[in-house]
Image 1 (spheres, rainbow, N blue to C red):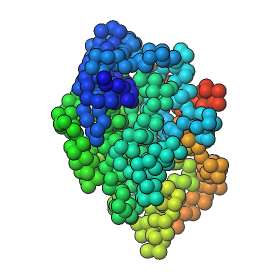
Image 2 (cartoon, rainbow, N blue to C red):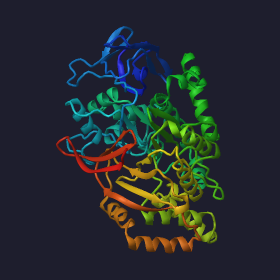
Image 3 (cartoon, rainbow, N blue to C red):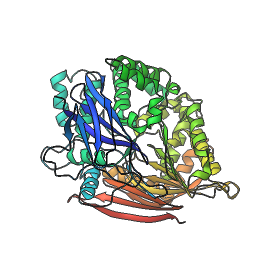
Image 4 (cartoon, helix red, strand yellow):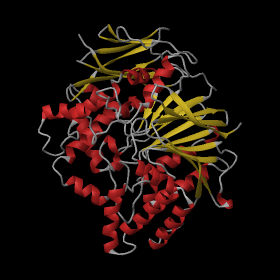
Length: 541
């Protein structure tokens, strides 16, 4: 009899359809059966000995929240027997309703062995507990990267790895192949609270560096060094393959899935491993051949989730956060029928606006690495870039400026949205920053950088102090001196911190209704609750 190994995850939803992702213990027919008669079925597909299904659910009624069961070969496997959680539901938004979006990033999922969590309470556990107790339920959960940590494994996972291979051989206690990646997803998504949360709140996801390796695609020299190791190729291909299976498929609508030739090939093959591996190899050889970014529209809210890792151009003379095709896609999606949305959300795992000193150090370092001060400084710049993780938008100055220009264009004129919000994580703290353009170029929309991380991780006290100092006037003066040394052009916008920095395991919630936008930051507490740390009205109708 087939068993439920992982899931269900409620992924795509709209007014009448949804998708539900599961992993089964063997090949089977997977079914979702809703209490109101809606439902759907799908056969599992196989990758590397694992069996998955993305079940399309149709016949849903807008504005309803039917509970659902999951059946494998006709046997009910969800809800779990004896579960203390309420039934999982598929809530569909009626047309014209507002949207509540919860977002964050960086969830190190290792459970504490002794009940004392070394990095503090998990904010997703706290969110699940509140919803299960009857609290407010968001319409969408955005996970902005580092859903798994391939390079920072837990003690339990290291013990499991040691039973498979000799950890004295590279990559040591980091994951090495697809099977080891599946271990990370099981460790992360079998957490009881998180498992239930992901079964009942729709989610959108995008990778960041730790989903593959810290500082993934920092520079051309970094990539050359990794490619020279004997373990990197298998690690990268396995990371992309497991991301496609566990995260990417659920980001897509049923129509996009139906038009996806890789999805068709994997589903039609007795084992889709070879097809998926060939796809990952093409993505490695030519990142421009694959698009991990995607668009979702929720009534009058548009979400553009942007790949800021795999789509980079790393040549020092033409460095770009997004390759030309990806940059064109982002521009087209932002400008498409602007009159049809009131709020534009741009999901970028890496913040666009940073503390001023961090921005200046990154742009200065980028200038050094491209040779503005000679070969010796260039070598120093590369060492500094890797040591200090200098690889955000500021480290790609042309891309930073292009994004500023796109926001100015998108946010100007009678069709301008009320708000343009860049949603980010990565930096293990939270803050709100607002850019300003010269008067002749200023957009009509309010543009904001909303950064929130970690969901479950930590930041050393010295780093906390550094981020606080990075916003100070003294730090800004020091940063300007570095920028002059690097002969850096002034950025096209200035910006101010409007809130933060806040530290701890936390989540942000955006409430978007009409042309109004409200923001709330909540921090996980030791008693399993979420405490509101800050609230702000961003725009009003």
